[in-house]
Image (cartoon, rainbow, N blue to C red):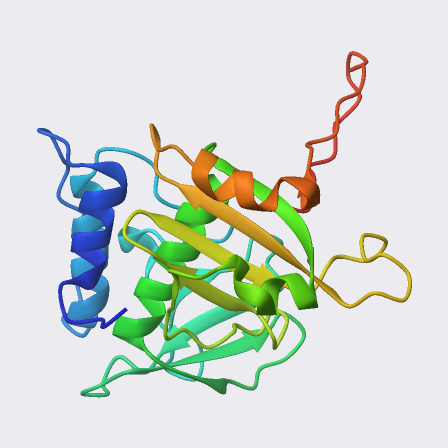
Length: 232
């Protein structure tokens, strides 16, 4: 809730634990990779497990400047969006662009905050300990998330502008507008994804939201036919 310089490492340790064996990331042979990015890769390596599941960080050995001098370090999973910093800046601000544009636009987040933001969001995306609920606005405003505190993250370019992240001691929540086809007609509502680390127990949160919980779709799988992922 109050990020500081070691917040990424502290979060990763709390969510994934640490590994007795970690490989020191190999960075390219230029000296202007921002320290925050170096520390992120070291912290991620210390877990001994995967920490990105949706979008991805550029591998240290593959970091390079583009034609404008910007260092691209994070890429959306469909390669529709890219994030970069000016490696010569003393307090690097993160910029984004689409795959159809050469124009870099400020995100409003500095590198340290951006890396914590994306690490938290990827942890929520990757955990198996989670559920989603489609909650009417009046239920949400009546205290469905009492006990949670807002995280200071600005929505990314590929998020809805009204996306919010919250947490309590051991649980994350992302609040977004419902995907197309999910919102009940004539009723304003929000999709909540409630997530915990492996081995966590979300039953106390689920119990209060049970009438609104979305069950993961079940269907017969046919050989060779891809099964689309649910939007949560």
